[in-house]
Image (cartoon, rainbow, N blue to C red):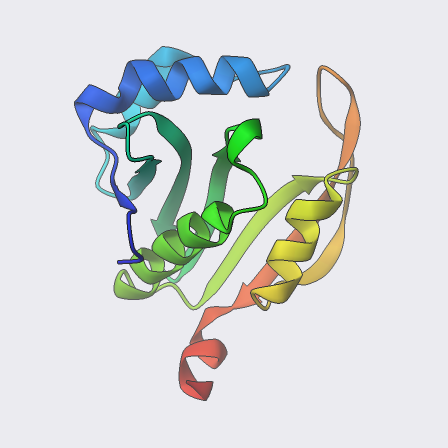
Amino acid sequence: MPKGARRFAPGDVERVAALERAIFGDPWSRRSFEEILGFDHLQGFVLDDKARELTGYAFCSAVEDEGEILNLAVAPEHRRKGLGKRLLAACLAWLAERGAAKVYLEVRRSNEAAIAMYLAAGFGTLGVRPNYYRKPTEDAVLMGLDLAARGARK
């Protein structure tokens, strides 16, 4: 597992929900994060700084041979430090362990930094989902990664 990333645990729910509310206009509910803990096909990862303050989190799912990055966020004051890459790497490692061959995600069209991170990680653009996001309404860029081929190249 990448340095510093650890699995999401019950004690993280409130902190993750609070950061989610601070970052997103249409945040997941606290209950959504609690429910993740009860499903074997879902996994979350969190990063803390030296003061044990939450700096970011990511959630992913694995069903059959497909994976999905469901949510990835880094606190604004901690961006551009490689934390998103570490969280993505943790999810991709877990998905590979679960046998995912393909991984998908959606990202806001305006989130150029995230799109660049995903492209650098090997994701490709598959299409656009019009008006996918709310608050504010915005298109999503659908991206995919052939994790099986990526693993074979390493």
